[in-house]
Image 1 (tube, one colour):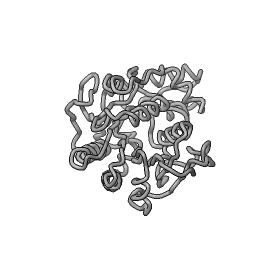
Image 2: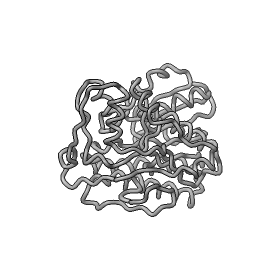
Image 3: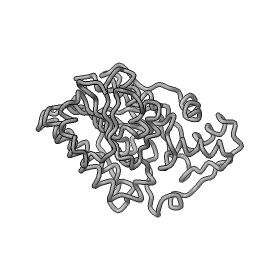
Image 4: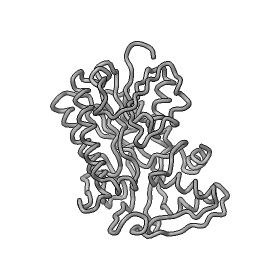
Length: 320
């Protein structure tokens, strides 16, 4: 790896992280990845594994002995390390809460010692049970009750946001928060319940596409390359420091219609099945009915908003 400043990416072997790493290397940056591979995979970095400007460290953030030095020498830090997928969150709420706060706190402490700029990736889940048709960054948040482990991920990421912005105010740490909405694209796995790759896998195999609940819940999907473009632009924008930004597509579709669109796009003979939430997850599972972002703030700040059409997103994701 070349000498000089590098960019540190936690969770760089994950789906989004690996695409970001590829983009940074293409831009001529030196990149250090920290990933414990609990949900990420070295296969995601296969295309750049031998790149001379990439260094991969398999460890948790809290177990990385080099972290103080890596943070001090970095020109920027992208913090993407997190538990992914509703299925995993429901089954491992304690791990989600403990790991998220501890790892983020340790990384923020390391970054603060030299005021290394940091971007924290958060999630649209923090908007919780809000019934608003569109979500803005300054909206009030409505999280479900603690008895439902489904909301533990939202709470963990929201705590990370509060902590990061506290470091921005009290330690003058240059922090940007990016709330990601359903990000999809090549190399994404359905292993942890992600809906589009799960639908695509079933459609290709001629198996039923399982839609949870009544299928009327709606989402907006964003191509991973658009997300990466937004993240890179936010990295370069000093006006973004101390601010929160939504990153996501704005083409809204119900999950039932998404299943139909996947079947039609792939020319599949698969049928569609409605599966009750209590059968898919656990009794009392609570879902968000809508999840559409407002992205005007992102566009104002970095002159970019995701616009790849959903049909093209499905085609690109299916071709992975």
